[in-house]
Length: 306
Image (cartoon, rainbow, N blue to C red; front, side, top):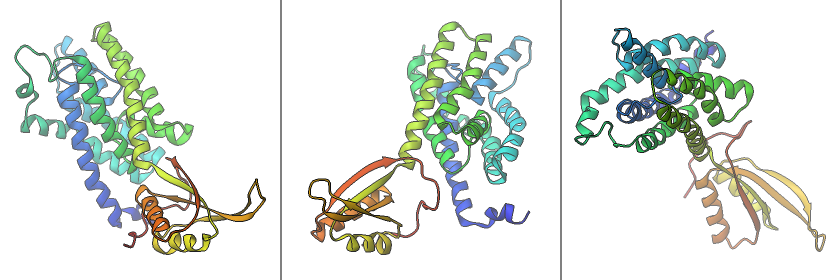
């Protein structure tokens, strides 16, 4: 049991909590300033909360969207703990409990009515622009939260479970789990807004995938050079990265050689190319992007030496 909660005593965990709060503030702003004023209902826990609150108003019960978000998240938190583990569960608890209060925080700092021009029914005045603003802000927030193994709770929990057990892209998981909620808005919204919501849900999945790939992007570098030992030493000693070496044979002259393969961050790849250029090393180099890495590769091990 003690080992299960060892992450609580790690500095990395508390740094990620601070980053989680910053990302959550961005997500709360997206919901408060773009989703609620325009009454847009996308496939999210906030969208489901809006459907329920609107439906409750028809029977004379008034409830704030932020409060409904809090209530719905409370029912889903146990899923995060059971299927995703205690660390993900704790981060999700924090995010779930704070999303609603953070929306109230933005309402206290700057109510969206202060940003609306006279005669407009939303901040941007057009549901399409409201949709774009919401999706871009929330997509960036979600992607960052997924990167640190957290979520805003609600349907993000379902998406993370799908990703873990069905091995889907996180954007696809977000879209599939969101479409069902989006369709529920037929109860309270006209057809036009439902279609806009469906488009927004699909677009949100694309944006989440885009930001996720951008945050996780690494370079897979393949190098063939007679001076492979100098390159190997630089990768291991200076960049503090591992590499693999393969014996290769040229197809034209059948000249034997050695190919080095390694995975680097963008900055590490730039440092390696600068080193090869300064040392005048003749090499044939190919590099491609990869966004998912499993195994012993670490996000950061040591600062690159100048």
